[in-house]
Amino acid sequence: MRAFFDLHSGSAIPRQHLADAGLARTDVGVLLADGAGSPDLDTVEAEAIHQMLGKHASRVPVTAPSSATP
Image (cartoon, helix red, strand yellow):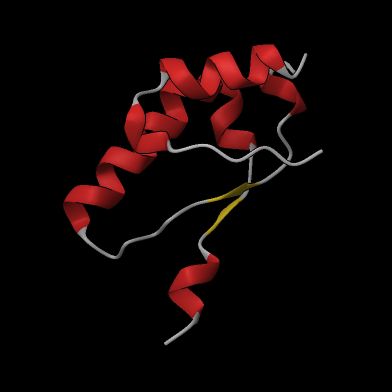
């Protein structure tokens, strides 16, 4: 299953999307991040991921495919 949401809108919203889809934090297998390449934005994104996934965040691979394109 794929779910799309904006991590920058606040961590409560992605958690609600998981709940609405009937998914637990531990159901997340990979995250496709924005990876803006800005230290400030990347920090916000990393914090939101940790807030959304809790302890499970350290087990989830995160990639930023947009950073691989020109």
